[in-house]
Amino acid sequence: MKRAFILPAVAIILLAIFVGPYLLLLLIVIPIAYFFIDRLEKAAPKRVTYANIEEVEAKYGQPDDVVVLSATRANELQALMLFYKAQDKVIVCGEEMRLSDLEGVMSKNMATPYTIDE
Image: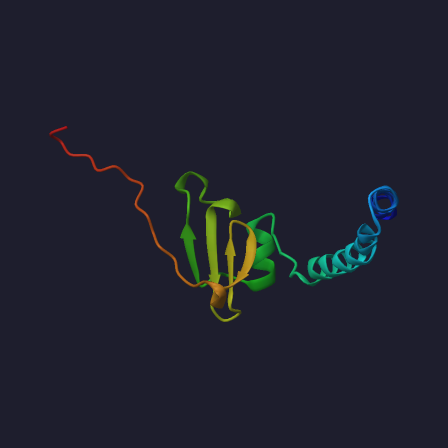
């Protein structure tokens, strides 16, 4: 962190000396901006991810509903959506989300229709 902060500070001081005193205001603005950006990153909620289905079932039990996203990988967590209505949780591709945060889901049929005439 110190190296990432010292180098721009030295560059700003040198620019202020050679270009003008108005750039000295950047010495005040940059640390304040850095503080607020760092604070926002720390305040962001942490994403909970799971490696396999057993971890999820150990924490929440059997899911209320399961949606298979890929039939070829139906026994892998990355191809499932697990719904837990009582806990207000949904596990999508291994990432935990709140069920109440889902606003809208639209399905898309990727299958191509086949008829005998073709």
